[in-house]
Image 1: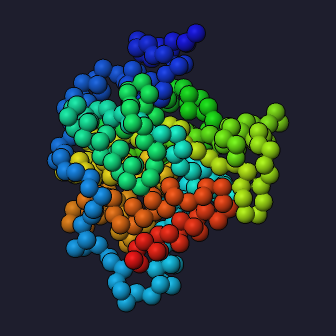
Image 2 (image 1 turned 120 degrees about the horizontal axis):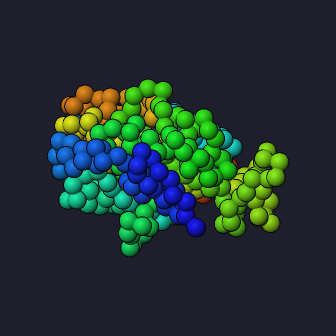
Image 3 (image 1 turned 135 degrees about the vertical axis):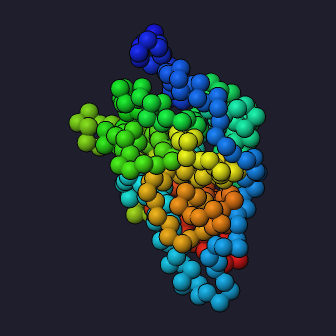
Length: 322
């Protein structure tokens, strides 16, 4: 039986509903009305290309060693996060096929964003469902003029997010109340899978995971790996005026296909992750060569290999130096 939760007169089903649908159902009427007035965005396809005139480039004369060092720093920055801090685990990714739902934009724009997200995910090798509906969505992109108010339900019921063994209250607090103002905030729900594909569970003592796997690990092979099964990306629509729709889609795809800290620093490496810090002339138009190389390597490396991050770096160097 589903439990009903009332928030200032609005009733929401707290069980049996995804986070995304809960937020849509519980968002106050004033916010829902504001969502009907979309931000000023221009529709541009997220073709996967990026401006190159103003972006630093790796030239033929650059040494492979310098490239390897730069790539390794990029991989280290993107494959570790406060949400999944265990460095003995591989970088999390999607094994469950993706189904995208975009809310807070007029239908024609929401459909464009959803299509661009699907195109980017497919192009890098992430699994995507052939048939998708709102009820089966597991990747939500929610545009709202007031993220704090939209997330108020979760602030009052944070345990809605704590349904996986690796989720801690400090991680939930960082998502609900970021230490500094951000344009986009992201929450990934994940489960830890054993090598036979079954979920690991928390031991009775609460200190470690028990994985139903008869295959042991080694210094080379891991016994478990984290896998995303739900993502919520909340975009402050009051702070994306003047951006192209394709740029926003590319950014949402990047932070949704891999778990990245909101204060990630990629330096001068060409990346869509610099979208909100670069000047308008320097902003990438979409997923950059480096972004695509990273995501493609992430989704084409062996997650059970303890050297997965090094494999990602190696594949990136080969792709960029080609």
